[in-house]
Length: 282
Ligand code: AMP
Image (cartoon, rainbow, N blue to C red):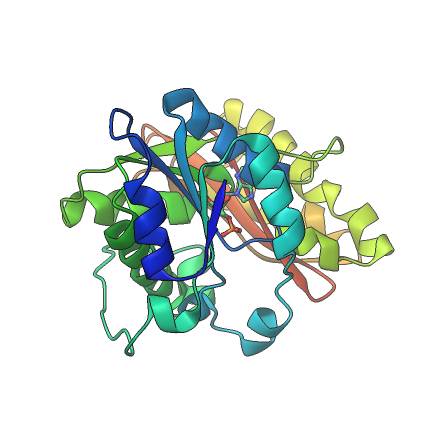
């Protein structure tokens, strides 16, 4: 595995990979866990040429405190990536990714009007900036993203198509701890008490999915309200939103027949750590 810190090093390393195979790309912000490694493993099912980037992208953080305390473990990450079978790890500096200020504004249509969009202004524009920049550098044919960040995945699929990148976006399932909590680099910031409370988030989503199956019981709006109340019964948790959306447009729905694919998405504060999760309803 080659570790590259500069564009020049990266270009040299990528030129040495066999061009018989496609380039599979896994962008990350580091502090890697089994969820990230599962993306690498998925990529290896398609191609031996797997590139992973580790870059904590400042333009997608609307909260400077969240950026400042974002965990980092480059040494451990490289070890895990090497064991997993990665070909190249690209760990660029901010200057390599943004040699000048990136002022691009992306039109994300309806996709950033719900969920994380209004709660983290500028976040998805920052994601689009960094992912397009990385696509331009890495030039993969395949790119792998987790369903854990469901809205991000929808947005990346959207601009990849809109901007005509010849890249296939592959969605990978959410990897969870044994108690159901979605793996996240932020989980390591949880106190012991908040870590114990956090599995309630996914167990509530699972119960909500079962309730949604009996469609005449609750409307989507009532179900969202039920999820919030259920999670917030634990004083250590505070739901920021729980929304039932059309999985393709991410618009809120208020009737079960309004969309052929439906997702329930939530963000919950466990103390000052913000956790997101989602589940397929239909
Ligand atoms: P991040 O480092 O948080 O930006 O995540 C990098 C990639 O890993 C994104 O495509 C995430 O959706 C994905 N990812 C993060 N957590 C998980 C998880 N628990 N299961 C599957 N994929 C994940």
